[in-house]
Image (cartoon, rainbow, N blue to C red; front, side, top):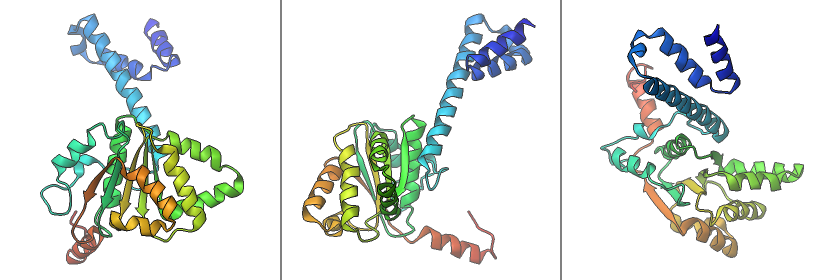
Length: 257
């Protein structure tokens, strides 16, 4: 009876991880040989992991990543396509979010830019940073809707507090004048904040971004804020989607990986 009361009290205190661990200890005879400090340390460790998992689930849900299961551990190694797995992992484990870095991932269509961006964003979430994935071509439409509803100010404020912003398909389509102005607001609100990092994926070389942005003054302002502290990842090779389709065809409709 006393044990049931204790378990109930732990759950009422929102210590579900500790309650689960205590129940498990009672079912494993090996735990009886452990001292009080050891058993209590195991309970605290379980609660810590439980809270981290809940936080990660919430962060990933809010991030809305295109590839939510992308992990840096799965980055391809030993190919000419892009960064090898060791280099990419070392970069991902650095303090790039705290440093407010802009990560520019450049490569042809289908080279895995979006996947790498999502892997980096997911890693940031694993380290308890907030993240959000946006496609630039669709961003303009969303901003126009927000302007119409009158919610643009609160949305920009929330975006400014997001620690990792993924802007996928940067420079994929022409910008309208209003879109340029909104994009400057998005970038400017995050500029100078060391805890705000940005990931861009693009097919367009950086030296052509100024022409894509169109307006010289706005282009200067955006690029100055984005590129003053940047790291570039260049991807190469044929489309991964095309390779996957070819593999499926060769194996009679059964993917090889």
